[in-house]
Image (cartoon, rainbow, N blue to C red; front, top):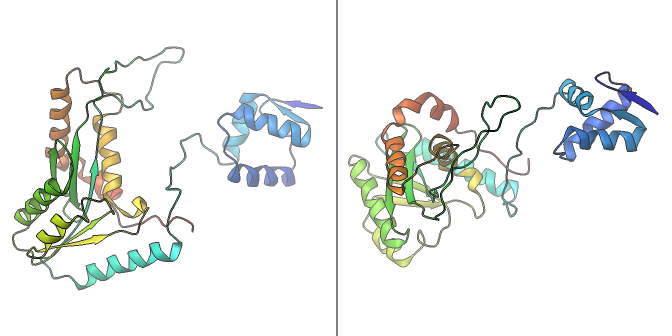
Length: 269
């Protein structure tokens, strides 16, 4: 049996096989990879030695991306992207396209990575309640303008109120294309009745396609800025912090322009 620290004793063929295996199998620790290598080739690595080998093979330690389990076929997703591009090509200069979705942040910190002194622990206080905000919003990725509401609940009535806000926000637009998911309140009879005499044109995404709704990226960014590793003792403080973030989006404009680029993720490619 061979025992190695940071020096790789696997030959080039074995390294290629290990690389292929790692691309299809996710290990939580370098020690887990070391156990696989020992079982497969009878070559033993220390955890630190395997960590060094993984870096040499081009691997980094990070979280995987969560994808919807019931995603649509590739051709359905690509058809939406083509439809979106068609909307962009044919809309008038004053017409607007926005991406709409709801988010429900809880009054509790979300733990995220941070720089902590080696050998030390960093504690963050948490809340005992389960209070949350119900936020429905629509973002214009060209101007980074966010139109949003905070309501006790998100339903057809609050959705219509948000659509009215959109019409007020874009008075010169003859058409406001709103890309949204298939939430039941977007498809309700009340909303459908309102749309009959509205400049709003709702365009539902394919089912199970949050990867195509660019506002999902915005909400994730919002949570990182407001919730990650942040403790708010009172719910009122938490609510104020959320509203302050929305009021100061100009501060994040460079990051948001990169984040909200139209590089739609097609699942299954």
